Structures are given as structure tokens and as C-alpha cells.
Length: 375
Image (cartoon, rainbow, N blue to C red; front, side, top):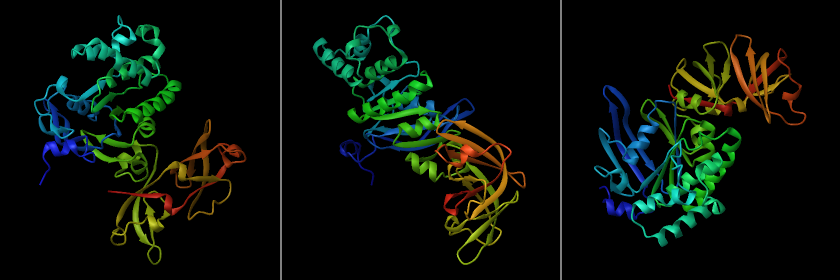
């Protein structure tokens, strides 16, 4: 029997946010198709997906800015059906930050507290706490146009956190920052969340940002959450070819299974290569000639001038080699025309530094690098 709402609210192990069958359409266009989601208390969860996948709509439904067509949404054990946005224990930080240009930093932060009727002394105490939290103590009297992009982002964050929400919703919070600043602000954002313990739900379409920021990732596709898990779990064990390709790059192979000795299988790929699956072979793969799709991440592919010595080793020609600082991205064209992507570390004496496009090379990977993907 389901626990009553009051019991859920008192249980620290219960999800802070519980969503079941949440649906939303605009006319004949279905935006959310019955979303289920449990958000752990005190975690950072990234909603990750392409434009139009339903991320922002889901965020707005949690905030109460829109009403769902069906399903349920509980925050800290309380049903949010019919609860107005301003009465929900959530706050939302918008991509534009939406700061009041004519107000000082302190007044921007205090705005919500003042609107709720908190006395001046109490407001000042909380504003001082928030300024210290985001390291803006000496900038309380400045206006937003006197701040850098990173500082404005911290003011917007402080304005949300000063309200002490159970859940903070962040819609593309770093999109307005240049790339050089984003990495620093990512670290600051995580550090602040760890200090206050507030649950963060962050909408982003940036895969690297999602993995760097979050404890859990919810990958969305066509209005549904198709996989939920820790970043490493979702990256290394994707539930589908879509997730595998969306969360990073991957080399995909389709083919038919063939026996390769006791307990071992090979995959005869449609475009030529024969892969040794080894322990990667699924236990329920079925009979010979069963169809299978597998993938190999580029960082698991070695590229050498001579044979790599790995079970899966293929001669080819280096099509391209792109230097990107500590890494190089290589594309190897195999004899049958297929290309393999490889990510190589630029270490002293490493192979990448000696390779040139047009070189004859070998690309190889171990059976353990192969990820079996559902059909």
C-alpha cells in the first residue's frame, strides 16, 4: 500500500519529486507522453535532450507555470494538483536571469522575500547569507549592468536560493556565458548546491554540461524519459542507439551473430567487419544469425601504425586527425569503406603525435569495449 503524503514528506529516503504519467499536449501536438520520474532528495538532476524533446515543458509543469493534461506530481510528498506556482515549494532560475535592471544586487535578491511580507531585519539577514553563499559580499549595491555575466548568474541563483525552495529549477542556466567562463561557473554551481543541499533540476541540451554538473541524468526523447541514471551509467550502458549517440560519439555496428567457439560469439557486420564479442555477447542472444546492434566509444579505439594486438584489429587509412588540445580526434577508413572514430590522448611519445592523414594504420579495440544495444 502506498505511504500517505505526510509519511513521504518525513522520509528522507523518499524522492523529493515523484512524477507519474505526466502528459501535456498543445492542440494535436503531444509534448509529454506520460512521464515517470523520481528525483532523489538533495541531488542535481539534468534533463537532457534535443530541442523539442519536452524538457522545458516538464520544468514548467513542475513549477506550476502550466497545467498537465494528465498524471500526478508530488513535491516532498504533497500532491501539486491545483496548487498555484507561487504556493509551490519550488523556485525557477531562467536562462535570461530576469534581474530587475533598476534594482541593486541586494534588492534583487530580497525581492521575493519582500513580496512575501518578511520584515526588513529578517530580509537583511537572509540577503547577507545569500551574498556570502555566492561570494558577492562587496557588490550588494551594484546594479546588474555593472556586473559580469558570471556575477549576474550568481545574483539570479542567490535570489532563488534565498527563498529556501525544496526544489530549484534551472532552465539552461549557463547558456548565456561564454565557453571559457562556463567551466568555472559549473564548479561554482555544484559547490553551492553541495553547501545548501537543495535539489537542483537543470534543463540543458549540452551533453558535457549534463555530465559535469549532475548526479543523475534523465535523457528525453519525443516527450518521454528514455533513460535515467548516473552519468557514468548512462554513458557506459546506454539503453538505446539514440542515447548512445546523443550522449557522446559512438561507432555503431549492425550484423548477425555467428558462433566462435564455446561460450563465445562473433558479429558478422552488414558492411564487412567481423567483431569478436567475447564477454560482451548477450546471454540471451538466441540462435545463430540472430540480429544484433553493438557500439564502441571512440576513446576505446586504439590507432597504431602496426597491428594493435587486440582481438578486434582492422587495417585502414587515416582519413583525418584533428588536434583539440589534450586530445586528437581520428577517423580511420577501413578496407570495406566503413569509418571508425577514435579519440587519442596527446601524451609525449603517443601515437597521435606521429600520425598524419593518409597513413596506413590499424584500428583496434578489445571485446570488453563493446556495448550491446537493444534492438
